[in-house]
Length: 92
Ligand SMILES: [Zn+2]
Image (cartoon, rainbow, N blue to C red):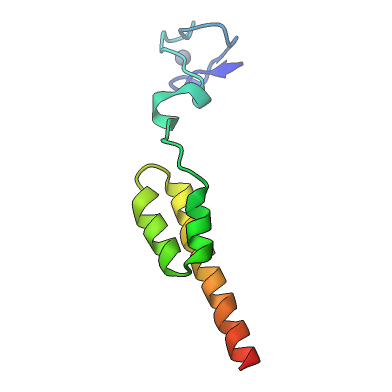
């Protein structure tokens, strides 16, 4: 099932154009606006191994291609750094 982005009309997925307004129907997962370059999960590892710098580097490198993964890397770097800091203070 596909929804027309213009008028909201529901169409069977095999239809290419909306029968109500003629707008081209594009499934969200195949739409050109939703295509992002997939970035390797190795960036997570960078963020984990080199906190917080690795997370910051990963964020700036992949933020244009994969904003959500970039944010995750930044958060991983920051959170692990914070945990390491707290553990370090606690044990010291
Ligand atoms: Zn329509």
